[in-house]
Length: 460
Ligand code: AMP
Ligand code: ZN
Image (cartoon, rainbow, N blue to C red):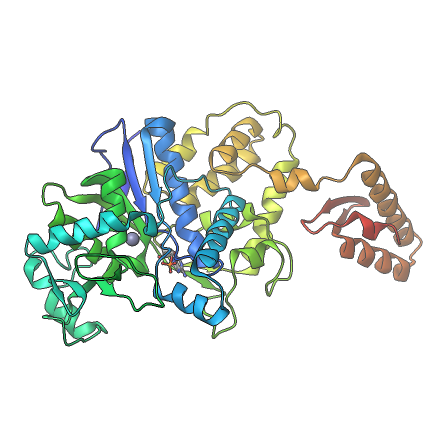
C-alpha cells in the first residue's frame, strides 16, 4: 500500500518513498526534561507512534529506526535546579523517567534510540567547528553564532519566509556580538555555577537547536526520511536544524519529509497555566483535573486519534467520557484476550496510509463493531496500540461480581416497590464505589469505572 504524507516543506501530500526501505528513518523532537509532560506534549508522541506502527507494519519491524531525543541541557532546567536547590542530574533523571512512564501509559512504543543531549556534546562541538570552517558560523565573545546571511538561499524555506520577513516579524534577541539579528546561538559561555563543557571557544554549553542536528546525524546519517514535531517548533527550531545540518553536511539533504502536528487546546481554549486549564498527563491518569475522574492512558490515545494530527485538537471532558464508554463497550465483546489474529482490518490501513487519517480509522472501528466483526476489531485495536489492560485489570472478581449483582437486584426491587429514596441511596452508593447501573425495560446492567473501589461496596 502506498503511504502518502503531508510534507510541510512542499506543503503537499506526497507519496512516501523511503531512501532505504531496509532502514526507514524517523526523528522526532522530544521533551525538555524539567517537569511533567503536559497533555500537549503527548500529542506528537501519539501521532508519531501511530506512524511508527504503520511504518513497521509496511516495511517490517526491524526495518524502521525511530529516534526521539531528550533535551537535558537547557536554561529552564538550570532555573528549576536553582529554585529547588536540587541538582540538575537529579531533576533530569527523574523527569526523564516520568516521561517514559507517562508515555507508556498512553500505549506508545519506545523509539529505537532516545539520545540525551548531554551524551552528544563532543559531536555538537565537532559540528559547530565544521560550520565555522565552512564559513557558516563565527565565534564572538565566547559565543558561536550561525550566520544566516551565509545561507540566504535556504534559510526560511520550511516555514516559507524570507530572512527579511523573519527579521520584521520575529522577536529576535538583539545582541552586540551578532552580525545579523537573525543569527542564532550554537554555543554560549557558562559561568562556573552552570553546566559547561570545554570547547575551542571556552567553557560553555550548546544552544538549543544544535543537539537535534548532531544526534540526527550520528544516529540517522546526513539524509533520512521523516522529521516530526509540533508545529510550534517549525520556526525557529526546525528552520535552524535544517540550516545547521545542510550547511555542515551539504552532501545530504537532512530530512526529506517534515511532519508537524497542530496544537492541543482544552475546551476550545489554548491550554495554559494562566487560564487554569493546564494539566499534565499524570494529572489525567490520577484523576487530578477538572473532570475529577481517572482517565486511562488509552482513553487519551483514543481522544487524540479522533482529530486529524494537522488540525487543532480540543480536549473536552465529554469526548473523554464517550471515548471511555466506547472502548469499554468494545472490550466487553467476547474474545479480546483470546484473539490471535494480528492483521488489522484492510480499511484501517487504507485510512492510515492517507496521511494518518485517524478520524476515518475510528469510523472503521465503529463499523467493525456494528458488524460484530470482533476478530478484526480486536486485531485493529491491538495494532493501534490498545491493549485493554486498564479494562481487564478492572474487571471485578467472581465474588465481587456476585455482590454487585445482588445490590443491583436490590435496586430493582426498591424501584418495583416504589421505594425511590432507598433506590436513590443505593444507586448513589454504587456510583461512589465506581459502579454504574443502566436499566432499560426492567433489565439492569452494571459496569465499573476506572476508579472502581470494591471496598466501598461493603457498607452498602
Ligand atoms: P517542548 O518540551 O516544549 O519542546 O515540547 C515537546 C514536544 O511537544 C514538541 O514536539 C512540541 O511541539 C510539542 N508540544 C508542545 N506543546 C504542545 C501542544 N499544546 N499541543 C501539541 N503539541 C505540543
Ligand atoms: Zn529538534
